Length: 459
Image (cartoon, rainbow, N blue to C red; front, side):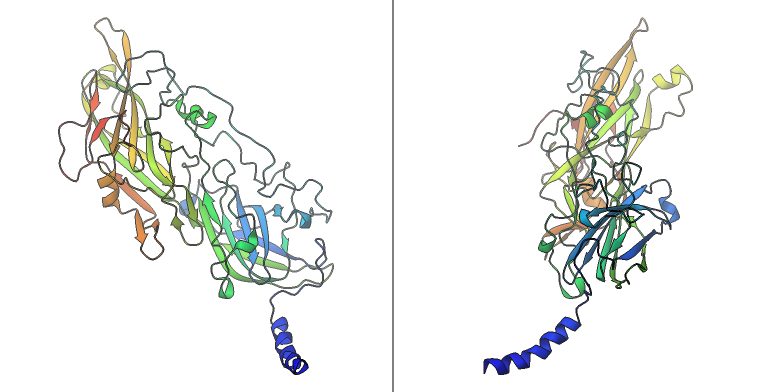
């Protein structure tokens, strides 16, 4: 009876084996049957000036799972790159085994900023205080967090150029912009934990963009904002807000078996688009006569800690903060008298993040969904001597974010995802800046967010 069952099952087993998408003659790392991959990136004209020099590429064969990680240049053709994983399959362009393989995430060493400059003039570190000699920066330093450090994952002389190849099979291939200073490694260590379904559905469920986070004392933050006083200490800061993060997925790419000594080439065309939101904050500052605004630094909280690249779902349980420097219109200040005159100034700031989660309570001045603002000003006394002043204010953006509709809630998945890719967020309340204080006035109209002095911590 057992022999009869085996005879009946053997043809079925052979049929399943013959239908396998994996066709390999050997499992040696440098076997001669790899197929070359020609990665090409097609960029829309609107992204000019923000295109990264290189992109990470992850290719996963969904039958008998195999994963490859590459870092490649991001041109329309003739791209070069490095095979990051598996390192034992990496060979240079001459066919020699890589003698200095990269680590799994492509890092060749730490490159953390060590400049701990204060970012500008020394100011008080207390809300609405006078100059007391503290070194909180005034925002005049034009450095941007992360920009001072070159991307060590860009293929260069320090990163050997490899043959970009893969074993035979059907692959889903994902590309994404990745900077080791901004993000954690974007794929889980154990590829076998990736949940696969029919034709690879769900294959990328374990691939996430996960922000690295830094305290206010970090050299990155200091180089941008000086010794920044954190009045919203519920979370750390992220970097990399200044440019979009791009990604694209190409499913079911067939990589054929190459003959020994004559590898075939498969072209993989990507059309990356941003996975981040471009968010423009606008607000008006009504400055009193005799007050000159020198600079501003703003902080917005509520940036989700991670995003699932294949679904767009974000982690709202853990959020971080981001710093940016609003621009303000002082083009009309042609004379000293102009700069001293009373005026209403329009301020604008842009961040590129994976989302903003609003506050749980519109009355809180700490936690997610809150903007904190430092305004550096000076006035003159009767003898013409300048007196500098730092104003620290904040505003809960509950209503502003509610009206913008940046995120939508999936009741089934119990997760947030982006509802829009770009939005202008006008803050209706006018911020009044006088010689001795800054505040939002007496307008507490329902549905309008209001400015207040920073410093209160809501628990």
